[in-house]
Length: 253
Image (cartoon, rainbow, N blue to C red):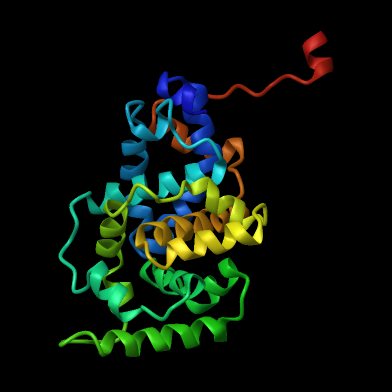
């Protein structure tokens, strides 16, 4: 698909609409509830650009990596790429959450991505009560590090923290494929220990891991559009109509 989109071919854009538009809808509905329908046309127009890095030769090769990259394009298209003013920074998080494990840091980072206890529990395959206790500890830890504190700072500062984490990539940061292997259980205990050792020192990699978890969830719960459902969006992008394929006996006739 990426090659076809890069070449501005109708086949690529058609596949993007049929397969990935339901995921785009789900992301917009999550991050911008009540505004998602109004934003959809603009996001699709922005994505209909063959020069986007998303379609580059070095674009992510696995479905979940691609959806994670797509998510950034969707949010950047709405929010812009400039880091907004934030009441929190990564240094404050590091100091406040020094005692939190790599797994607990994912609980907290999914909070910056506006995921509820129940949604986070589903992505992490854990009990919501476990996640709730960690988030309550985090609230108290933050309160002890800030002069001005109010509940929910992780969520309200989510976009700014995400941008800061994206910019904090270091030479030793892991590729997203490493976290896909971790989620799929294709790593050894020694590798898992090394990954988690790195994550307690790196918010960039916590962000990458959580975006892969989100992508994994979005891929699982989204269903492709039927040709009839896709038709209005194809028309919006000026794509030719899809002619129904003839059955074998009709073809012979």
